[in-house]
Image (cartoon, rainbow, N blue to C red; front, top):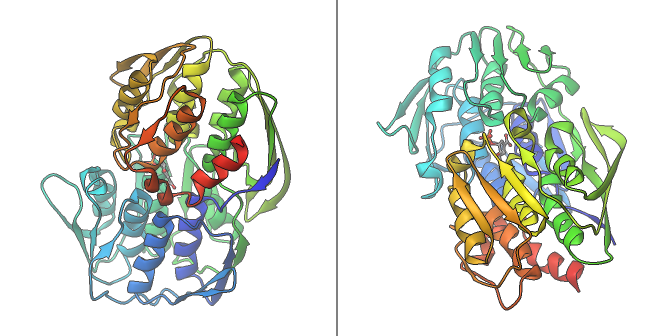
Length: 413
Ligand code: S3P
């Protein structure tokens, strides 16, 4: 089987936001169809950025002419929307109030607010340092900041703020996270210096030219069908036009270390990003240990990795992944609770979990907590389990991957 997947979610958010600043009209094909990216689009439109559908393309008229929106900007469930918009809008001279759904309103925003305030941003946030928050017009200055917890959202927000700031912005990481924002800015000719863990944007206000892009397929979405194919007998799947950025391939390296049959090949570069094919075949797996600087490259794939670990021979241990507790749900809890319900021997740790496999999974009632990646992971667990598995909110997969359940049915037919 050969398939192409919907566009990468991280790239889609960034493409829309940078196109809003770019001079002229930018055009995108295969933008992520998920609810999260739709939230970014709607927020930008509310700020006066025209975004139109033309056939299968999305056309953004940029220029950075942001206007104070009449209503709150609703980031919905999307942490990337809320956090990157804060960076994008903090220095644009408009006033905005950013809100989110219940899950997003519990997630920490101080990690962005603090460094933005250091740059001169004027932000009003509740004592709990969560949404809603208000951004007031402000002039941004230079920043030299070491990010305390690895986060591409923090890094990207500060780089976006740097594009409109009066001084240069340097962001330092202790562990490298996904580098899409900096690769895109470099490809667009912005004054930016990159090394593995440091990024600096020059002090002059940056001009971004209009750009067009076919958004490559989402490797985080690919992890789910790849896991299903690995677990079912005699199967093979190839993903065409997939984003193969090395900072996003941690899951596929881990799958290989577990004995999985995974190969990939870069065919071209699109705005600084490697794009190519990836093939996965059925295999029996064994457990593995993951920790430290391996975590950011597979942070979103840990729920499906845990499902694979339940089917792998021996022990799997994930550590240093405390950030999972701050995602769309407390993913350590969601993983442990649901896998245990299905008959897996799993121990919850403060910053990860320990699984002893293989387990004979039995169908169960799954609590998704409205978390798309928990729903997607346990839909796969359900397909290899005996009896029926029911998700309490199967539709929450629309956050990143509308059509997910249909595709899984086609693969498992
Ligand atoms: C993302 C960064 C990650 C990831 C999220 C998307 C991004 O979050 O979990 O799904 O597009 O920058 P953190 O930056 O909080 O680790």
